Length: 415
Image (cartoon, rainbow, N blue to C red; front, side, top):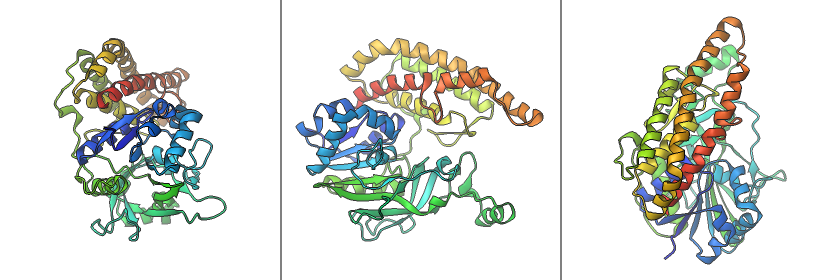
């Protein structure tokens, strides 16, 4: 029997792992599906009740779907299917050059350079008339966002088929603006920054912009959320995640909690020497970043970082490694890893060795800039970063190649 929820896997990386972890925690019936399988007709052969698209880069997801896959998703929704997109998965559904055009709204343009540096919990104002927003949820619901993009209505004005289920209502207690603990700053201090120096710290979109949209497309429907409701140990967000899944799949009440995630302490079920060697090598590289004060511990699964540092890329790879080690291997995963594992471990060790040099060198360049004037990153240091992580905002280079291999392993472990 086909799973009632299919998770579109490609280019989700850590977010795909966290979505699957969240689905398992609330007791949902799910299985991954790849963009290639969608393009080959997977959604028409065994029509799921829900297609869930995790976070990640919408542009890469769209390219992986290709014209056939994009048409297949549109046809699935037009026939009566339901699409639930989170962050990058929400952006994929919008009307723009790299979007599926399920929703007439488009992406909000970045007019404030601070907009994309926001992460952590925010407060939301829910639409009390939405079936997705039960009265049991708190009035000032607190949910996590991670570097959200934004929604913008179509140029011609509002679309009556699109509703704002939740709007931003200010920062939450742990909200960060890059490496600034914005949520911990008293309102009086924020006001003083504005009045004395003209510095506005909280981005304007936190005051009333749309965070969650709902609407219809053909005979189907969609829910698009910039809030990562699957985030571990976020009780209010997790309860809403379970509520939305129950409504969209018509499966009634699900469990409401996603437990805290401490990757380093989870039992190892896939006890493999190549995974273990890769985890050890990457941990050493992270330690070098911490020692150089370019990274810091934000929680058990997420690093914080100085602006411009690849902290999330490293968090993602470490989390994917830990997630793979915590899952019981099946025949498909074992066969894949016999081929990929040895080379992966060797490449990770080489990658980590370069990082252990990169971090102190970068820290020295920053320190010297305080003496010698504005920082001018030495050309070799800039080239090293591009080789390791690709162009900004990252996720490419050698780090991206390692992620692609891990993505293939996790796909088979969840299948």
